[in-house]
Amino acid sequence: MTQISPEISELCRRTSMVSYLEKRGVHVMTYGKSRKCCCPLPEHRDDTPSFYIYDAADGGEVFKCFGCGVSGNIISLIAKIEGKKNGEVVRQLAEQTGVTLGEYDPSMRTEPYPDEILASFCAEDAESLVVSMLLRDFIQVNNGSEDAVNKACRIYQMWDDFSDYGDGEYTQQKYGHLGIKNIYDVETYAINLVRSYRDRSE
Ligand SMILES: [Zn+2]
Image (cartoon, rainbow, N blue to C red):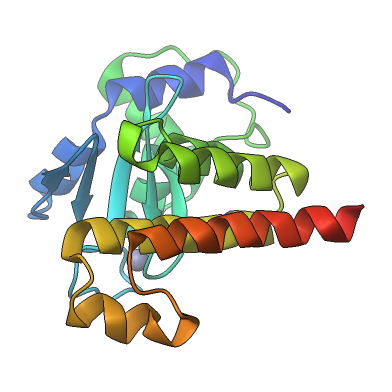
């Protein structure tokens, strides 16, 4: 898997997603190891905070919106919000942060792969360890396909909702029809999903 170039990683490390959003009037809340806010992307009208920000392994930050499904890093976030091309944002950030780009090649990859983003969301905290490991496994077995990442993200969102809202009316309305009534059911659901894919590939 190709890595993002060191200059791009450096740009991302030096530009805080939270500061960028707060300057634009977005209220960002701390949530465990992550931060969350209502989705700031222009195409998404978000009333509940669906937009999560997490520390990436390379020291930068990644985001995933569980409402509209869009994910990325600070470069793609600025590009989407300000209607710019990734290359424009790269040059703009280089100037602001003092990173020397050398020969900037527009074909250079500027965004992390979806499975890298999800891996950041599956950071191992004691509570969600089992689900995180299952989902990482699942993504690996499926070679990081977009479909697998989306399925895994959906389960991660369920886990989050049950951690946030417990097994009250909100979660019952959202997941009751899937037979998921509490956080243990989410775990079982994840186990069954991974198992069904393993069976298929055997
Ligand atoms: Zn969104």
